[in-house]
Image 1 (cartoon, protein in one colour):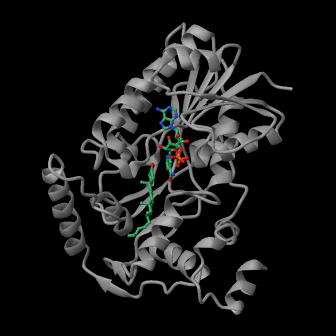
Image 2 (cartoon, rainbow, N blue to C red; image 1 turned 30 degrees about the vertical axis):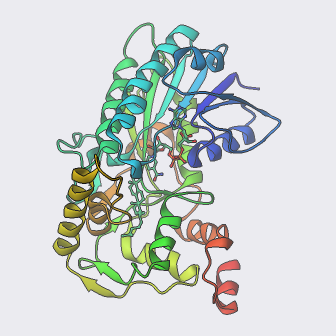
Image 3 (cartoon, rainbow, N blue to C red; image 1 turned 90 degrees about the vertical axis):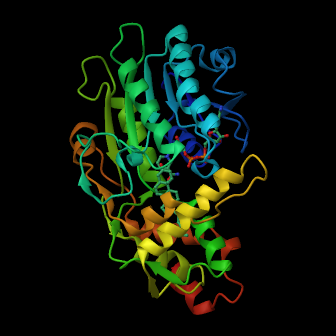
Length: 350
Ligand SMILES: NC(=O)C1=CN([C@@H]2O[C@H](COP(=O)(O)OP(=O)(O)OC[C@H]3O[C@@H](n4cnc5c(N)ncnc54)[C@H](O)[C@@H]3O)[C@@H](O)[C@H]2O)C=CC1
Ligand SMILES: CC(C)CCC[C@@H](C)[C@H]1CC[C@H]2C3=C(CC[C@]12C)[C@@]1(C)CCC(=O)C[C@@H]1CC3
């Protein structure tokens, strides 16, 4: 039996899967989150805001290991919220860890900390942070990662490591597949933006969980991983539009076939986002599916090397992309198209 660990953000998509992975490996698990999204007799829930130190201290007292995977959703694009939670809140998490004598802290960062809308091909962790991050989410994920990695070098702090996943997907994800299907239902998934040849990383959630647990188990005084960030992906870069097409077809929707110029869609998304910002004091408008960040992500290369995670953490994906796509499709029966055919069902449910 290992010492108690706390998953901050444990009610979220990744956090809940991480809790399940930890329980499978006999950890004693506590969850700290704003909300409780599931019940499990083996898990103790502490409800609170990570910006409040006293609330955190109640959860962290006696714990040896903390996973910090809480964040506001990228789609909110609320500057104040991102700064308060991702930067100031993370400082509070670090302070609470110090006061409670927590030994190890594993941060869920993001591979997008180096993404600024231009192609990224097989990037290692040596590539510098984005100088002009595309949204407040990315901007504050950079500040958060720097804060956590720097804290790891102080004498009184916990040892720290950051995991940088990319495009996490899998059962219960509220973001990737649901956004895609909603766009298809509104007839917005008819076009491939750009030439459609861009290659990207998507990462099945169980592989991300494995990366986090390996990091926690490797983190000790003198370990080469202290204060470092690691890319964790499926290590199978795939054409963005092939991946989206497989998801859509698996759920009974038509994949996009016709092409539309990248600059046209990007300019439209940019103007829309400026309009929303300008009008914000008067009415709350949302740019919807097509934010500049999403359009850029849909049209550029962004895949990362996880050689360092393989070498230092012993990381190797346990679920292949093919299996991951099939498992994910099976997990969303409610998102299937009404006229989903039985031949399709047989193919996916095999
Ligand atoms: N979903 C993705 O593709 C990727 C996600 N990440 C990172 O992974 C982590 C988890 O993301 P997801 O599971 O997708 O998000 P999620 O939105 O499903 O989970 C986040 C959880 O954090 C909690 N939370 C938010 N603010 C809080 C606060 N102030 N105090 C306490 N709890 C709070 C939420 O209630 C939620 O349960 C985040 O740090 C995110 O930046 C990184 C790369 C890709
Ligand atoms: C309508 C389509 C053009 C695109 C639909 C799919 C998108 C919703 C997703 C494709 C790549 C995803 C992604 C993220 C969110 C969902 C997508 C944009 C992140 C921004 C989530 C948070 C991160 O840390 C980085 C991710 C990169 C990939």
